[in-house]
Length: 122
Image (cartoon, rainbow, N blue to C red; front, side, top):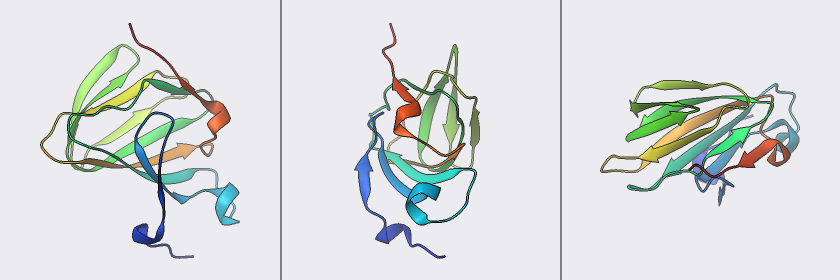
C-alpha cells in the first residue's frame, strides 16, 4: 500500500489540530498495532489539553517550533525532535514559531475518539 499525503483529506481533530490520518487499521483494512497521522497547527495556535487514556503517542516534528506540555513538564521542540507521550498523560502543543508547526503522530494502540479526553487547564 502506498498513500500520498496530498491525497488524504484533512479534518479538525478534537484537540483542534488539523489532522490527516495516513494509516489506521480501522480505515485501511490492514493489521497494525498503531495509527499514523500528520498534524499541523498555524502560527500562534495551540492544541487543546487532552489525554489518550490507553494509548501512548510519539510526535516527530517535521517543521516549525513549538512548546510541548506533558503533565507538569514543558519544553521547546523544533524540526527533527521526537517526543514520547505516555498513555493518560495530559498533553498539548503550542506553535511558537513563525511558520506552520507540522508533525507526525504515532499512536499505539491505534487512536480512537472514545479514548481521547479533552480537558481544561487552570
